[in-house]
Image (cartoon, rainbow, N blue to C red; front, top):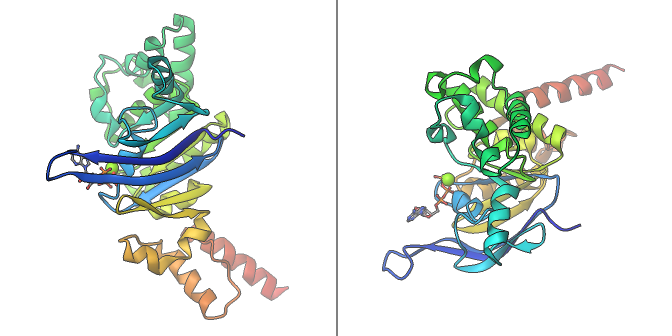
Length: 287
Ligand SMILES: Nc1ncnc2c1ncn2[C@@H]1O[C@H](COP(=O)(O)OP(=O)(O)OP(=O)(O)O)[C@@H](O)[C@H]1O
Ligand SMILES: [Mg+2]
């Protein structure tokens, strides 16, 4: 099957040609399969935001290419335009980009640009608002009257309303409290389940990523350091630590128990996983 997004030998420099030139990403090769959820993790400055900004042509490769649905997005103006609709990019702190008079208008902005009928725009706004957890009574309010968490949801709904085949979220849960983070991650999981679309999530939180991703890509110093299932990646905890990344405390405990010979799984990413696993072991022990 054609991948949703394919990255071939991608390199991007900032301040190219000056003495401050930095390769923010170097020779990246990556396939993102249709319908999968890919997590991208990496230390600050590792190149995560630079990488994803290429997926809809917001940044242009200095070397290499990006294919969306098998098509090089820089092939023509039309393929570039199409890629903006196919790949919905939600920036870090997207709430700062809300600007319309009402939440409804903000969520409708993308579909309007796509020149859809008013009826279709309405349908999309209501569907996206529902998926993102924007309350109906908030649709006619000014985005500036919403709480921080509500603004975040409104901004995410504004990308979902374009019904992109690929939804890319840069640190969607940043700045939220633990309960807010959990709700947001479960909202994304539900969205993916309901739409079957491809989801790419960038996060610092290895716990958030473990709960949602099918595969995890670790960026380190502008390059891909690891790519695999959460279990394959998280069991390399010492290497991750050397890259400034910490696997969830509970995962580390289980990995260490396993190393000491206990028959426990290594794919424990949350305290809830751990409790469920220990209960099961206890039941088995009592049987
Ligand atoms: N506009 C820019 N001009 C110059 N250098 C930049 C620019 N944006 C990013 N960089 C540099 O490129 C590298 C990669 O940055 P990028 O923002 O992609 O990292 P990141 O992994 O998203 O970091 P964070 O976790 O802090 O969001 C860093 O060294 C950064 O300083
Ligand atoms: Mg970033």
